[in-house]
Length: 114
Image 1: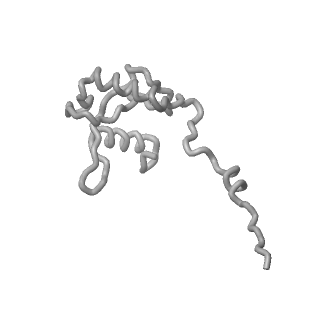
Image 2: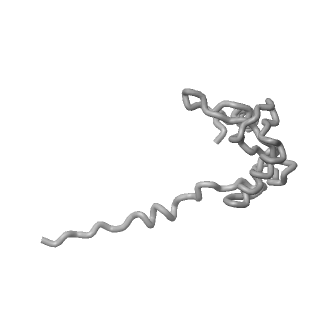
């Protein structure tokens, strides 16, 4: 008894999918990899690990764009700041970075920051 081979359907699925991270028209491309890590270190050293909003000093702050990339902001050091961020016991993001993200989402008219 010969086995019939099923047709490959994965190729048709892959061609219809959009790239995961598409930039909006007019937005600045995101810096990635070792380039972003170097910029991140420069911001941490410049700000001495201090949150720009509340003054909390920690080593694991988020590097935040003052003017978001989607609105034409850049990765220039003058547009970057450290903001505190952590997860509470329920796994919910907390801190100044989470609050800024929530406020930006409300301004855009969405309920979620992503």
